[in-house]
Each structure stands twice: as structure tokens, then as C-alpha cells.
Amino acid sequence: MPEPIYISAADSYALRGWVWRRQCDSSSHPGPVVIINTATSVRCRYYMPFADYLYQQGWDVVTYDYRGIGDSRHHSLRKLKADWIDWGQHDFEGVLRYVARRFPGQPIDVVGHSAGGFVIGLAQSAHHVRRIFTMGAQYAYWRDYAPEARRSMFLRWHLAMPLLALLVGYVPAKRLGWMEDTPKGVALDWARMGPRFEHNVRRKRETPEGKPEAEMLVRGFTRVQAPILALGIDDDPFGTRPALDRLLEYYSRSERYHLRLAPTAVGQPSIGHFAFFHKRFRDVLWPLAVEWLRTGNPPTTFPGELRYRPRKETCDDN
Image (cartoon, rainbow, N blue to C red; front, side, top):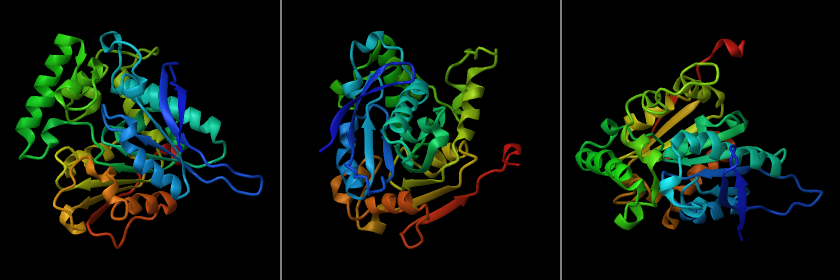
């Protein structure tokens, strides 16, 4: 059974999460541990069946809610200053530190859903990650949405959502049946996102050295050297081919595999952006993530189109 945990973010914000940890005796060798990064404003409880499965396959598992979401929402969201960058720089960073401290010597893997694959590159300790599996990972540039859904998605996420955030002080999304209530800063990051994320977040903010903070954020992605398998589903209106490729470009020092899958290839009429984590895909899709995290070998027999991007060498590699 998972145990509830408190995790201190890098800036000391109190996060709530869950841990699946196996008991090891002196003769056993501890296995890897995996962190699950959720999609924007989705509670970590949604991923519990998948976390249980990873635990049964040999991983210790940590899930958590970002600040302002689910069990990590402590007060009124109107007073909470939080954006996507906080979720990566402080929240995911704090979880990485927690895992390194509580699971010493164990390899660290990450599963990132949607924006959960984006925030990996914002954490200072991301260089400790061994392997990464992402599902529909992107940062919501509206021109990358599926053409047939683009208009309605633009109206909801880039007009209605930021308007609600500015009028109410947060997005009361739960009452609208969209997702969990969302901090204003996160909603505004999402709403104004352009083709390059650094042009639309932390605008006019500088580092203590006087450099644009957004430029430093981009450099942070080069800390990640873990190989990445990015899964994209053809009927996912968020995780289109250009959307996933746009994010993968930032992880330039990683070997990157982009697997495109049609739902009909696995006998399903639809999968979309969220259904991968439903129990009904336990025997159909979940082994794909397990095999990648276990071996680091890209799928060769799985139905779908696999594209490879090699890591880019830099002067630091010599």
C-alpha cells in the first residue's frame, strides 16, 4: 500500500504525495525508483493504478501534487503565486532531492505526462535522472493543437481560461468540469505560450547576475542527459507530432525517441491525451514504458512509427 508523504519543495513549499517503497534486507540490492510528474492541474491520485503497476514491476514509486493542486493546495489560490516554472524549479527539484535522500544509490527514472515532461528540464538536479518516459509531453503552443480541435481549444485555454484567472484570481476549473482549480500564474503561462517557451514566461525578469531569466531556463534543459522515449498518440489533440518535437528539441543532450501510435494499431477506437493511464491499458501499453525504463532499448516490434534524434555534442563533452 502506498504511504502519504510530505515533501519540501526547493523553496520550502510543503508538497503532498505518495510513496510505494519495498522493504529490502541486507542481502537484497535496491532497484530503481521512478517519479511520476503529472499533467497540468491533474491530481497525482489519477496515476495511482499506473504507480501500482510500476511498483509490481520492481520500482519504488513517488507521486506528488504540484503546489496549488490537490493535496498540495493549502490556502486560497487567489493568494498563491505559482507558475509552470515554479512547478519545475522548485516542486520537481524538491522531489528529486527527496528521492536522492530517501533512496540513496538507486537509479532515478521519471515518467512525465503532458507538461510533466516539460518541467523536467527546469530542475537543477535533473542531471541525476537515468531514463525518461513521456506521454503527450508538450507545453501547449496553440498552433500545435490538432487542426480539427484547434479553434475550440484556443477559445477554452487561451481566451476563457486566462480571462477567468484575471477576473477571479485563479481558474475555478473544477466547477467547470475541466480539471483541478489552477493558480493564475500557471493559467497565464499556458494561455500566452508561443513557439519558444522562453519568450513567454518570466518576462522582464533577470537573474542576480543581470541576465534574462528565460535564457537561463533554456540552458537548464542541457543538464538533462537521460535518454527519452516520447510517446505520442495520433488522436491526442495536445500531443501532436509538432508539439512533441518542439519540446524534444530543448533536450538536446539526450538521445530522443519519438514513437507515434495510432489507437487502431492496438485495437482501440480512441486513446487521446489521458487514457494511457487507465487500467484497461495495463497489458497493452504499460509494458512499453516498463521495457524502456528497464533497459533503455527503444521498441522495435511495437506497432507505430519511431523517429530518433541523437544527442548533440557540446564543448563540455570534450
